[in-house]
Amino acid sequence: MLSRLELLIDLLHSIPEAALATHSTTLDGFPFASAVPFVADAHHRPIMLISALAEHSRNLLACPRASLMIAKTLGEGEMARVSLIGEVHPIEAAPHLVARYLRYHPHAKRFLQLGDFRFHRFDPIRVLTVGGFAKASWLEGSRLLEAPVISLNDEADLLAQYAQQGRLDCLLRGIDAFGADALLDDKPVRIRFSTGPVTKEAWLPTLHRALTAMTRTTIQAKPDAAR
Image (cartoon, rainbow, N blue to C red; front, top):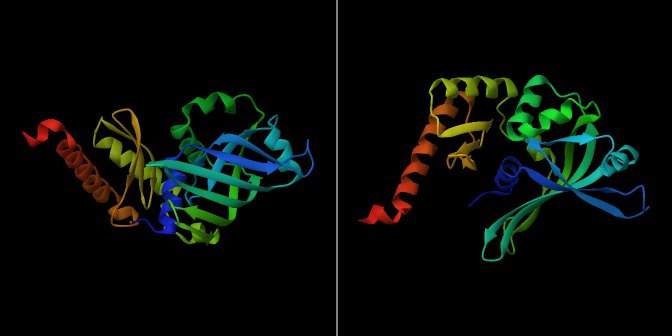
């Protein structure tokens, strides 16, 4: 069973879009919600690429306070979700962060060429995590900054090492201390480390064990496996 922090990090890394709610400047006193693509940075904070022309950009310029909701269907009518409450501010994204964003959202490359898109970071103050029915609790936003980290520089090194190994069926998009985000046979997959967070040195061996376990589980699940 995932802890509250692990659930939060798992959703931040595995879900590519979120609902962003800002304070409306068009209808004073009302919230305005919209869908935004995002990625998590090295400290698991949501990074968004937003046009200056967007309604939520004008709202954030007037008031940076916002909420971000990320959800994943669990089946049988249940849903895992997190609601982050905090502030959104524009940032100057380092090259490694831009590269990370484009691995998850390659179509966004054309937006960067338009000139009116800018990266923004969501800095959470508090987070409500809901792991399913009757599994809701609050976390302080500072828990993300205190969580184990693999830096963007280390991520680039590990991606390069993995690419040299030549595994073609699993394309890595992102690396973090708790797992990896990949395209496995062209399908997006979150590879979560069941052993908990790992260091850079232990990351590749842990990934290989996780992939081996996933392969065995897939083979056993096939109808022909029992014959």
